Length: 446
Image (cartoon, rainbow, N blue to C red; front, side):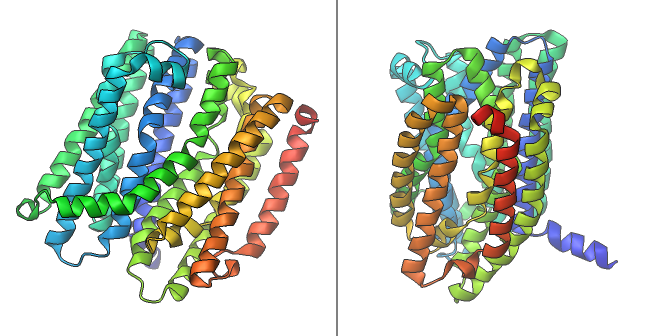
């Protein structure tokens, strides 16, 4: 009975429910990648799919993340249901307007944008791409509306149904029809399904209190703008990687790099879900110095889970890439091993504290410095280690950004790093992980 109570409370946790959804989303995409690699789709077709997803993400990731984080930080400011509902509606509307605006730009400047992002004069499946770009980004609000409304069981339902549908609609065409275009149509159908789910969620939450408010929208934009710019700068780093690879290598190498450069997705998903779930909690806190201890204790639990997993995957990655995908993708294992190292800065959460207290300009400053460092390191290390050097530059730049954010937390709130970071354990695990990396990759790097 005690175990059931613990499990029940765990399931009802905003952090756990969001982490579950993120892991489920990754698992679905990972299974799709395996299915595509095992299907009769050519590596060029798989590369086209990766470019489709990559291009759409490049055009939407920054304002989607910025608006959502701004929404989470503002939600605790409003006390009444009607005010919170207005914030929800106007945040979703702003996100949708961004989608429409970007889609119009793509329609007008197709050749220029396509050449810049994917080194091609035409966007693959242009009309379907524009439809995906309009409807996909705003659907990420579904889980966060459930989070702030503490409707955690609906997160599990939404995650299971929507991801199962996506998996079916993309994989069945790969094996039954052996038609790549059908898989793209499946992606669009799954996206429409998620959009309809969002509309249902909005309709269900006390519709009478909804109205479009310029005042709310201005506040959302004002609070979200530094976060949008910060997300654009920091989050553009994977897309800078994509540009460097697309311009210097062919589609086969691009596909190999994309398969390898997905970091340890578990660490990304769990860390991002944890960070976003903690923003409204810290925002409601009356005593920040006490509440940040929750970041330290819960991040330590993540560290104990993620670092051992990272070590095992780093050790067997070359074997996995050879047998899990196919021999053509084995060179992506070295890129993947570098991205595994990102678990080290991922376990630092100074940005969560700054965003929750609406000190968003500091995240922007750190992101600018990260971008500059990334470009410098990439151009240098690419000439030495090729696509592996590009990945190493990402690790170094991200680590620099987190160190700067830790300094800003100390400057603004007099919180020493040991207050919200389990430094001893993080240092211990980091030394072991880096040592393993050098052992595994020594012959390739040196």
